[in-house]
Length: 355
Ligand code: PLP
Ligand code: COI
Picture (tube, rainbow, N blue to C red):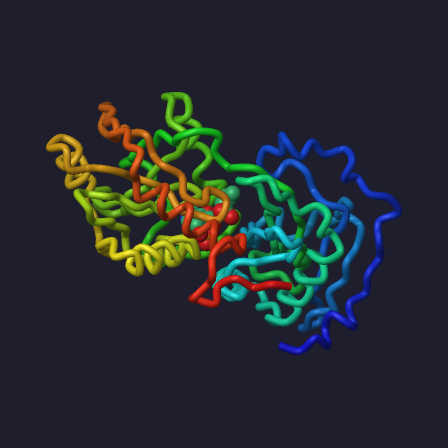
């Protein structure tokens, strides 16, 4: 990749920093934003050179198509700093490519990879003081694109904006996660946009998730929209199930996000000689495994969630608890993936990118 973009990037620095307002010991998730953002506009059929600007509000026309037809996509990535102060990213090109896969599905323009990658790297270098180093914390990176072009005609906009914003963050979940297996509402349908990181996929989950939260659960696990018999994924993470010693996860499809953490965990687990099956799994199989004692673990995997152990699940008005154990695949795999991400282990895969 050339460095040509980074040298042409226009940078306007913030007049002062807000970093002193942040309590780095109590970050929460995605609540504080760094001093700068990357902004790149699409108009007249092409992308303008990305710019780094001070973090600031955006002004849009009421007729901007984002408000009416929901052309909005995003990504989630993390930046880390190792013990020597090197800035690290994890498989960033995969996020860039998935961003463009999402863009295509929503009839939005694809951004050139070097604009995304070089722009992101420059932004991270400028705001590098904001990268938390406390264990479990990182700089959450949120690239997003939305339709700024105007008109009430229900057709794709002609203008778009990409922004990358950064948020020093702690863990997404504060404790173990209790999930509700959903069989009425659906997150995604065949031929739909479930595989894309489209904002609307998340909006559609909020109401059923609120109902689940009222019943004492943290997240919904979605089942397939046709039979509701098969496990798909959770609201913000892919799902792994351990029955006896085998780790099982659903195959990706046009209803399921092709999670970067998921595919990394599959690879890492195989290399640790953990038997892995990528196959459809029925809720009934999990219920039976819970009843006969062979269901050992369930956990979610995602950028924000990292590896989040599930303490129990609800299904058809009954709660099933997962056994407690000190030797879980979740803890071994979480350690391995975070060691790779933060340069505490050699990376035989070439996944870590040092700036
Ligand atoms: N599934 C959904 C619906 C998500 O929002 C996420 C989060 O990005 C994931 C899965 C996990 O994907 P990744 O590991 O690429 O973050
Ligand atoms: C991520 O893990 O990066 C996500 O996008 C999940 C998000 C909804 C917080």
